Amino acid sequence: MVLGELSGGIVRALANMSNATIVDQKVVTGCLDEISRALMQADVSMDLLKIKVLLNRSQNISFHFLLQRYTGKPSFTPEKGKPSVIMFVGLQGSGKTTSCIKYAYYHKKKGFKPAIVCADTFRAGAFDQLKQGATKAMIPFFGSYEESDPVKVALEGVETFKKENFDLIIVDTSGRHQQEASLFEEMRQLAEATKPDLVIFVMDSSIGQSAFDQAQAFNRSVSVGAVIITKTEGAAKGGGALSAVAATKSPVIFLGTGERMDDFEIFDVKPFVSRLLGIGDWSGFLEKIHDVVPMDHQSELLQKVSKGKFTLRTMQEQYQSMLNMGPMNQVLSMLPGSGDKLMPKGGEKERQSKIKVYMSIMDSMTNEELDSTNPKIMNDTSRIMRVARGSGRQPKDVMDLLAEYKRVAKVWGMVKGFKTCKKGLNAQHMSKVLPAHLLNQMGGMGAIQNLIKQMG
Image 1 (cartoon, rainbow, N blue to C red):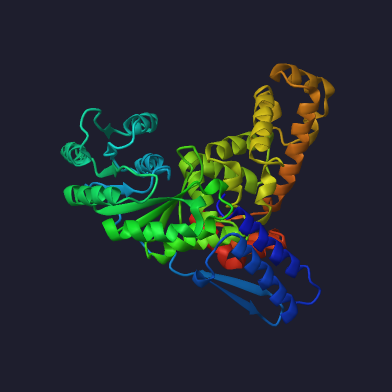
Image 2 (cartoon, rainbow, N blue to C red):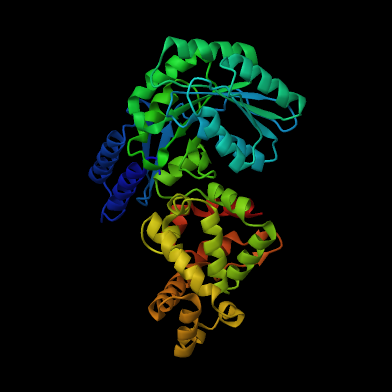
């Protein structure tokens, strides 16, 4: 994910300091030096980042990362039922067309009625690319193979969708391999003709500090109101892009995190920094759960876990939900501390592969086996052999699944003592059940109470 190496550097620095016998000024200075090196390696502008270290009498350390100018709202926010025009600009290859489709798809899930106009008549195949992606996302689109004037295409498309009562009309403009006067003039004409409510600048995260000049040039031409940073899943130095764009005073609103339609995250500085620190992003995690897991099923899962009833079926449902939520490592980064332990060990592909094997094995089990809370039920060799044959797997694979189940059940055992009351979970009891290190990573009692409110 974006700034993944930076996150690892910061977490290691904090871990080294927490392992120190005595936390004095020398230890704190060493930690800050290590964090500064990680920041510079990630190409983050130090002018835009301030670090405060608070050391109290009990030697508890609180780090405050103040990412100045990252925050802020775009100059315009779409509203359901009210027609709005959003114009996307950026260089060729930045992921602009893909971002248009992801942006439309994201808002469609929120109840909007989006449509996309292809005003890119410069690049061969641009309309075909948009048509293919929009069709897959089931988003209406407009374009032309004959008309070469992008302004005419944009005007016709916008007017067509306005008449059909679409409330989010996205105009995809052409790009170039580099900044050219003709590109900026075309953007200016399109902006004058379509009168967009918001102009979004799309930028490839890998370009680093050169993003500053790009963002400023686009901003001077069409008054950029917001920024989307793409290809963050593989950007070791994505910090330069974030810093440079932040300096233009155009807020970052989304991050493109992969190839899938759902690999599109709202950029919110607070959870972003929490994930850098390894604390997690509960709000983002819960939002993903709400998107893929029905509300009644969420309550059912929570009740099962709170009563200590973590069965093989519960794990099967957990795996299915996590697969639906997008890239696994990205989702797990939202969980605090030991959240990573809820999934098999390994990288993204290795985890995906293991889970698919485990899912096929569980599909071959009986209801009694899936729903049993007796861990000894699968000690029967004949059961293991039957499940292995039914799933087309080796007995060793079944044994691996059972070992994984016991391990995950132990992790979930931390919440076995959670009590429920009329208003939800009891935060006081949760704080006693959770291990001290995990409670601290989650932000203490205040964070627990906020989590309970979010869970509803």
